[in-house]
Amino acid sequence: MLVTFKMVSCEGHIEVTLPVWEAVEELARLSASSKWVYIDGQFWNGKPNACTETMLLEAEDITVTNQLAGG
Image (cartoon, rainbow, N blue to C red; front, side, top):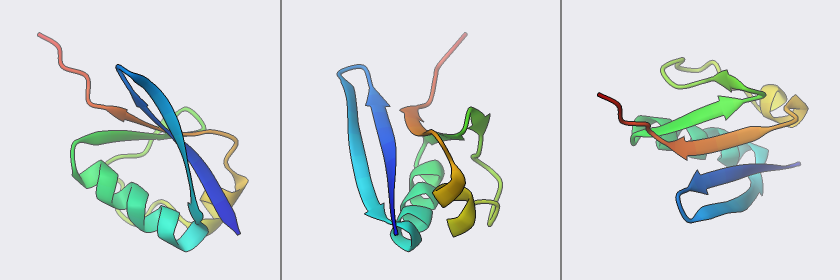
């Protein structure tokens, strides 16, 4: 089974499609490398092992963004 997620940046977005097991690993890697991961609008970062293959397959929207900086 394949999972598609959006990678959003200031230049627009791209869609990435991966096998579900690879998507779990890639989203974990991205969240550990200063990207923010949202699954169906819920912030996912910092929740180790919270993302499962079933969760990704059932998700309607998976979005990865750069961290926001504020001050």
